[in-house]
Image (cartoon, rainbow over all chains, first blue to last red):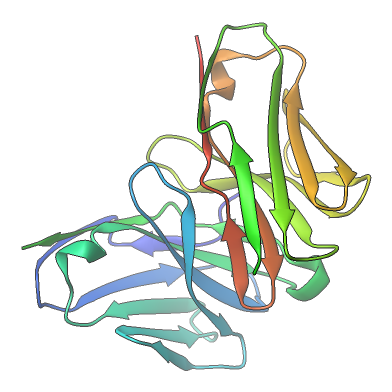
Length: 113
Length: 110
């Protein structure tokens, strides 16, 4: 069963704008991860945020986690056409040696040049 | 450095035929290994995971099976494919900091 639910399902923005994607989940987690998938390709790990963290940055990416609301957001600043892809959040209930990721359905981001 | 290899990239198989997809990992020992399936326009569904040689856990009942004959080798199999087995199959291994995915196999059962 899918744990994470992203919204919006599709997002279209102009190059240079910021893109904000949200993810909600239902059960407690050890960590939450965001992945990117270009069409027909494998997934690429973007960022991991642990349950005891509230915010994390990596380059143009900013991820927040609110465990009280069971939600996370991924912000891509100053978007580029090359950011066009599908983005997935995934939750890991246990982490470590018992790690299993449960994925949402994904958000399709289109960045118009 | 750690790498993951998955093949073939695409596969077209008739209904009722067998299946064998292979995944190998380099540069790490005793990884957790995973098989996921992605239906068109959907998220990923965990099919099997393995914490060690010969140790396989199945997440959903299905027409597929998995085996781990060596530490860095994970195989997805079927004796008789169904139309519903079509999809994009991804192998992955986990380490601290996230999962590394293979490039995927697009399976079309006709």
